[in-house]
Amino acid sequence: MSAGTRVLVLNAGSSSVKYQLIDMLDGARLAAGLAERVGEPGGRLVHTPRDGARREALRPFEDHAAALEAVAAELAADGLGLDSPELAAIGHRVVHGGRRFTAPTLITDEVLAEVRRLVPVAPLHNPANITGIEVARRLRPDLPQVAVFDTAFHATLPEYAARYAIDRAVADEHRVRRYGFHGTSHQYVSRAAAALLGKEPAEVNVIVLHLGNGASASAVAGGVCVETSMGLTPLEGLVMGTRSGDVDPGVVFHLHRVGGLTIDEIDALLNRRSGLLGLCGDNDMREILRRRGEGDADAALAFDAYVHRLRKYLGAYYAVLGRVDAVVFTAGVGENAAPVREAVCAGLEGLGIVVDTELNAVRSGDPRIVSPAYARVAVAVVPTDEELEIARQAFALVHTAED
Ligand code: AMP
Picture 1 (cartoon, rainbow, N blue to C red):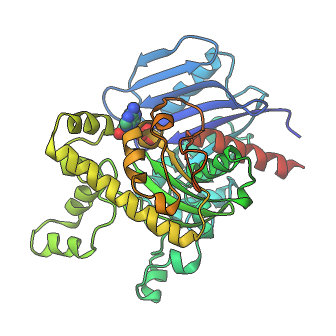
Picture 2: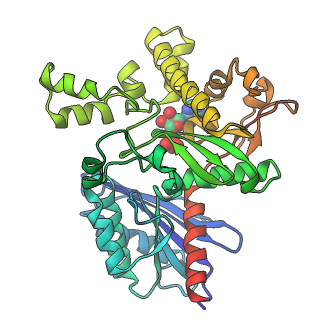
Picture 3: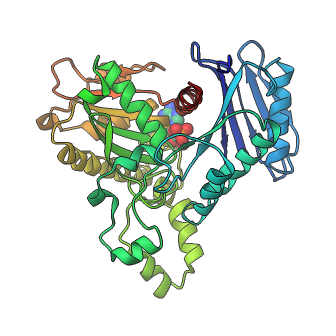
């Protein structure tokens, strides 16, 4: 068995590479960083070692290979290079695992080919993930590399929740179904919430609200995901920073036939110019809260639409689960925006959901309960940690494979 205890987590996006080197003995971040504007002008690498000062360098990256090589060089400069015997595995975030990948998977040529076959259902994400994997394998061909899929936690959705009510043959031919995303976060947060309640995941039903720039909700029954708000793509569901979430599909036909917009224009509209941004011109909740506080009507509308959608999902998932032990807020907005948490839970005492104003106002990086002790349902804030979850899953897989 490899003596290594460290896992390098790589999250390769379309123009960036995020990374963390984590020691699985104690979960310590030995280094973290971000290479951005890959393949664009103005490339930049920010590297923060645990035992040292943050280093920032402006430098162009021709492609992902150049960016990953620069990352490897930064790690080596701290004595944490990819050739270190302490490195046990590289864990890759892969957005779409389709129906095949429902668990962390050791990457082989065959696995990579299958991830490539899924590009048509994740055209924005899987290509960058694949490049990250290819480059990392080139740099360390002997090291186990593990893919951890954003869709995997949602593979347990019952068929009636995963299927759209459309012709089954057409849906199957084009692999159209609800896959869900942010799964690594929903998994991590739902388990951490159980721990916060002093219970095993199997003992509790939780609703997780992952509210970042992208946003999704999930209903997790006894540790098993039974419903989630994103679908074939990460566009369905909640109002997000720049994505519309749910719209009548007829809107697409109307904008095309009557509005004269092309399919690509509608795609860009719904994914990049909608959501909070489309409603008020800002997609950052901090700015929206500030403007709303100054009486700005557009910001107030955006906030109300965001909260209203969340409340509809909260009510729906309450009904899906039947009994709810915790409602858990996570990611940038969920962890930081007390007014959003308060508004989402307002007036739901009848469902056992109550927020304690004072507890909710406390700023902290720790998992915490913000509902009063008497409330039937715990309202919790749990900072998400997708990198740690990816590292854990990759490490566990490498060890099981070797045992
Ligand atoms: P994420 O995608 O999880 O990094 O979340 C990013 C989003 O979190 C930003 O676009 C902001 O809207 C939101 N956010 C971050 N910090 C705060 C804060 N202190 N208050 C309100 N929203 C915040």
